Amino acid sequence: QVQLVQSGAEVKRPGASVKVSCKASGYTFTSYGISWVRQAPGQGLEWMGWVSGYNGNAKYAQKAQGRVTMTTDSSTNTAYMELRSLRSDDTAVFYCARRYTAYAQADYWGQGTLVTVSS
Amino acid sequence: QSVLTQPPSVSGAPGQRVAISCTGSSSNIGAGYDVHWYQQLPGTAPKLLIYANSNRPSGVPDRFSGSKSGASASLAITGLQAEDEADYYCQSYDNRLSDSLFGGGTKLTVL
Image (cartoon, rainbow over all chains, first blue to last red; front, side, top):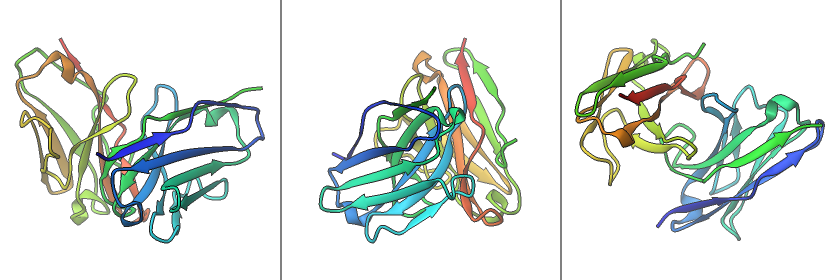
């Protein structure tokens, strides 16, 4: 069965970086991409971007451009999302989700990773 | 303000039918792009409920159905159950923004 397992919760200082991982299993990793979605406390869902499992090409949401990098490692079937220059309003749960293309539905989701940014 | 507009909340009694709307424009739903729906139970990750306007993934009860007309889409839930209490989000693509979008989300309360 398809599973996406994310790394654990993180606490970071403002200005630091965080790298969240998403390990995929149960399907051919290179046949799908991975999207990252942010959910601030009590707020809705927000796409951050999509990275191809086939060639690592990434497409970022306008709001995330410049501070986020999404990568994949097909040798370990793992996707990564790095967010830099963290601010307190970056505190959120970050989800990874499998998507065939950058615009398709997200059919499987990771359990979420809470990133807390606090001084 | 989301480009895809959903009512902030809806409610219904057990056994009743509720519908959640998702209103877009000519650059997204009205341009013919598919609408997908997600259910997020409290404290959990979202789950795909409806894809490509009206299709249910395996395991989703047929109490859930989706439809699309013009620049709007709708999620209907019949035979409401207590476990349907959750947040529901629509998703589509916008060609002016060149990106996927979520609606703002709708909280369903089962009375």
